[in-house]
Amino acid sequence: MYTTLAPTLSDRLFPKINHWLRDVVLVIAGSLLMAAFAHIRFPLPFTPVPITGQTLGVLLVGATLGSRRGVVSLALYLGMGMIGLPFFAGGAQGLAHLAGPTGGYLIGFVVAAYVIGLLAERGLERDLRTALLPFLIGEMIIYLFGVTWLAVVVGNLGKALAIGFLPFLAGDAFKMLLAAALLPAAWKWVK
Image 1 (tube, rainbow, N blue to C red):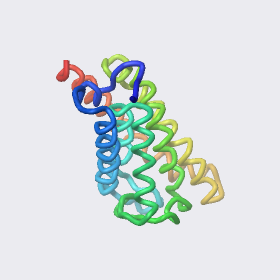
Image 2 (image 1 turned 180 degrees about the vertical axis):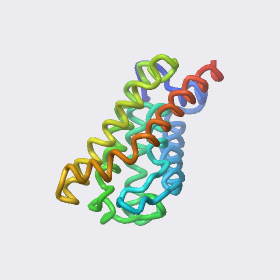
Image 3 (image 1 turned 90 degrees about the horizontal axis):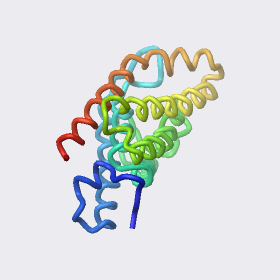
Image 4 (image 1 turned 135 degrees about the horizontal axis):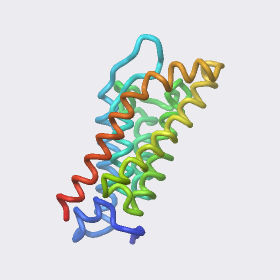
């Protein structure tokens, strides 16, 4: 049976369902949510990295599912995209996509979901005063992986920061604030 330090939002929402069945359904649902958010895509003409809903998906999946289910859900999402399902940004798919300019962000999603989940298991996403912290750390992890790999692809860290970090700060700040408002509100509704 899956246990956490504190129940996650999904544990609270579905407490009486068989734990194994609940976990499988939640992991699959999280990966499908990520696929849906990947189709929210706005390409920018000066960068191979589009604006997507994926980062919001990572924040929500990690916080609601917890560390273990969150990481499995995001790994499943990557696996489904790698085997050819149109689950990456704008319907892209395939193993080669991980070697492209956005591959680091995709790997960062998995790590970020795990860390956000760990912090959610400590109750940080439940209160407006602390909810932003897990999401800020998650975003930092995504950028660490994404910009580092983008720098390898483009051959220059300064250029990678200019095309893979700076243009996305305002949008990702909005996504963090949205997640930091939604999760405490959802916890109040559940209680």
